Image (cartoon, rainbow, N blue to C red):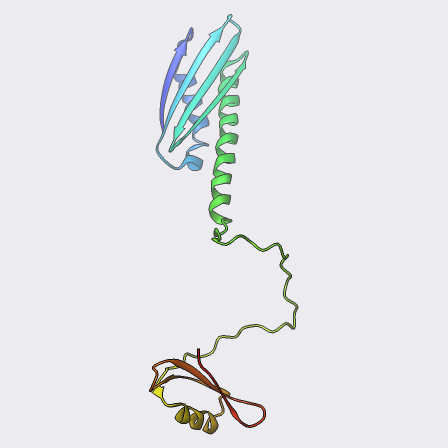
Length: 177
């Protein structure tokens, strides 16, 4: 963190510089990046000590001002205010990234979503099928000889995908798009 000091009606002593840098050591882990900080310390009317801090971090600028009868207290208050601003922004950034919802191209339906019941049917993915070119008669023989209820195949004559399935009445059904 690069800190630049400016004194207005006030000479900046090494002690106040060290005190300010110690308080900024709390902000270093939060900002975890290159920051440019400008600390302006001024005395107004011989009893009012004002500390103004401007921090440039990434695309954001934070400012904080505090005044009291003691310069050390003014610096501490200004840094604490600045810390709250930074933590608030970092919280927003983290929430936005972690809780982001994918945008939908279609407007959501007005029907409320109902949580599925404990015994409601669900989709269970099964193994992949290799689609072989064959006539529908061969697909019917394969379904009849296997324990599977259906077979996805490519019709050898039309080159279209079809589904052959066993019906409850003992016959076979053919689904073609």
